[in-house]
Amino acid sequence: MRATRDLRAVSRLTLLLLFLVAMVLGALISYMFVIGYYVSIGFQVPTGTSVTIAGATFPAQNATMFNVSLLNPSYSPSNATVKQIAVVTGDNAFHEVSDVDPPLPHKIKPSESRNFTCSWDWSNHTNENLKVIVFIDEEQGSGAAFQVKTPLMNLTIMEVQFNATISTLHFNLTVQNSELSATYVNVTTITVTTDSLMTMRDETPPLPRTLNPNSSVTFQCPWNWTDYRSKNVTIGVRTSQGYRAHFTTVTPHRIILNITDILFNLTDTAHFNVTVKSDPRTSIPVTITGMNVTLGNGSVVGVTQLTPALPYSLQPNASVTFLCSWNWTTYQGQNVTITVYTQQGYVVIRNQTIPSLEETATSFKISSPSNQNRINLAWLLSLSTSPPILRKRLRTRLLDHASVWMLRLTNQGLLDNPPLFTFSARSLTIPSSLSSLTIVLPLTLF
Image 1 (cartoon, one colour):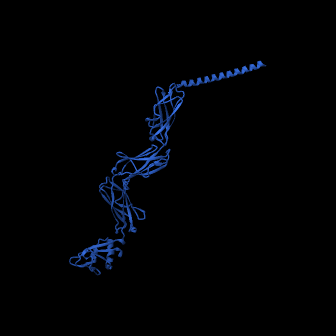
Image 2: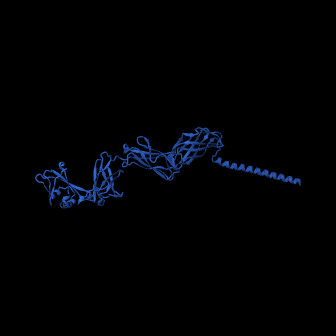
Image 3: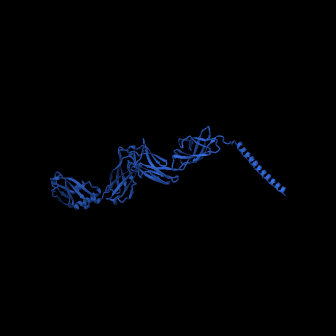
């Protein structure tokens, strides 16, 4: 019985040993097959030192740096000496990073990792696939490369406005942070570059100014650009995160335009005249493109029928008078604003009060004939400078109501003691000593 138990024990031990031998042989054969495949394709176990880039990050809130993490694998036979870190941009340009913390060269032991902070401005390479390359000592082994995509940031100057009509002492610019941007930005600096770089001060709203994604802001920047007309200027915007935007434009030409005269003629209430003059100092022809009338209540009337027609090119040191079609009969006595627009963006305005028939007075100045002191009223009316349309009305009123005339003597010696005048149905008698007189006729009396 005991011999049987011993035999069974030996059998189990033998079976266990055979199982272990089979496992070892199987693992060995598997290893040989696997390593044979890699040897056949040229794989070799590293014999020199190498490093691995475990990761590279470009923080959206700081476009002036990036971080890279390096690992010296455990199978490396020696320390790895990192000598250089570089970036290859989308245009295949090679950029060496000169400012690295900790500074290079730097040794990394086997199985050890290190994080490096690299100062490099990537603000012009947002939303771009970059390749980070690490070089180690050539005598030690090979370096490593790592591809990464930078965050999307889209900071844009949407518009720059130089408006000489408003002022040549400031300009406006609108800055936008796109809705696709990865983060907010803080606008800290606005610059103007002409012959030199100038930094703006006292902007409105004041800096710094936060711009979230999908938002914009318009700045008014004080700068006297009177002496920089017709010149290329580049406006720059910088943020605390390192992002920048630029906008190049040409400042407006020197344009000095004036409305020199506005005439509302009581004989023609369907039209009015506007005279526009371009100053001799204006540097280019000005193209007049539009005109409107702003009434006292703020409503605007567009003037579309003008002679000469628009657009009209006005040369420097020249003027033009427009005959404008607009029936202003019902607006007599109102103060209106005439606005003239140009293709160059220059706008000129002038206020004018439309005359009223009831408020207008006319006057006559006549001299006493040398051989008589009686003046025929019909002859007097023929000397009138009144509009022709009023002459018939005045003739009737004067003949019927001569007694309401207001006579003002132009002979100063007779002003204090005006002589008596004799009226008849058709004539007026004046003293022979009076050389001349002025007759003022208020239309409100008729």
